[in-house]
Image (cartoon, rainbow, N blue to C red; front, side, top):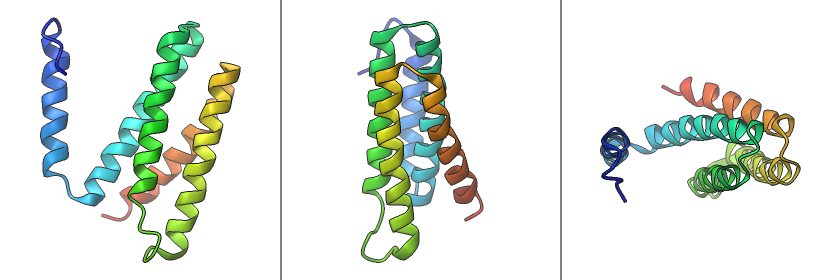
Length: 126
C-alpha cells in the first residue's frame, strides 16, 4: 500500500514493482540479495538506537527475503549449489533470530558476510 504522505517512498515502490515485474529469475535474485543487504543495514541501525519495534519489523523483512531466496532454489536440478545455498539460507535465518533475541549487531555480521559473498558470486554469473 502506498503512503500518500510520502511521494518519494511511493515513487520508489512503484519503481521497484516495475523492475520486479520485468526481471528474469537471475535479476530477481540479485534484487532480493541487494534488498536484504539494505534491510540488514537498517536492522543494525535500529539495534544501535534500541528501536525494538522497528528492529522486529526489519528482522521480519530480512527473514521473509531469506525465505524467498530459499524458495527460489531448484532443489531437484540445482545439485550441490542448491544444497549449499539452502544450508546458507537456513544458517542466515537462525542467525537473524539469534541477533534479534540478543539485539546484537555483532550477531548480524555473519549474515552480512554470507549474503555479501553470495551476492558477489551471483554477480559473476552474468
